[in-house]
Length: 158
Ligand code: 5CA
Image (cartoon, rainbow, N blue to C red):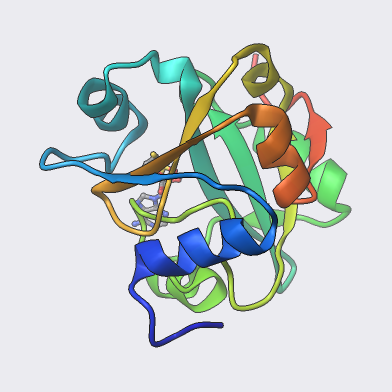
């Protein structure tokens, strides 16, 4: 999908196709981790969306998790209906088209089954990666759930 476009432009195009007019912001400081993204943006870590890719058997599955939460991997496995494992960096790029630290919640070569952390829904706005470790976009969490066709679930450990 749109392989000739830059990673942020691919994310932007996917959002636009879904009817979302999100502005992608570029930072001179890192947004590679949830904490770094929160510091760069000047927002709460809880409002940062971690886009965590797993493999359920051979099928990619995506967990969108609040930056303050740790993913309950067992819970993801039961939702996916198969044991899940964390892919290596190459497998993440193969499935998503993006490198770790910039994996967005949408804009993939083929759709990925997605679950979203219920805790993200408490915020007016959340921030997700936009294809690189320096690009993010803001979106209402309900909109994020809609464009990713995500199932809203409790995904946190503990
Ligand atoms: N840009 C920020 C959010 S705006 C971001 O991408 N954060 S993240 O949490 O979604 O991405 C980092 C995640 O990538 C880590 O939590 C981890 O699950 C995964 N990761 C980091 N290093 C590796 C690795 N070597 N192999 C597989 N996954 C990794």
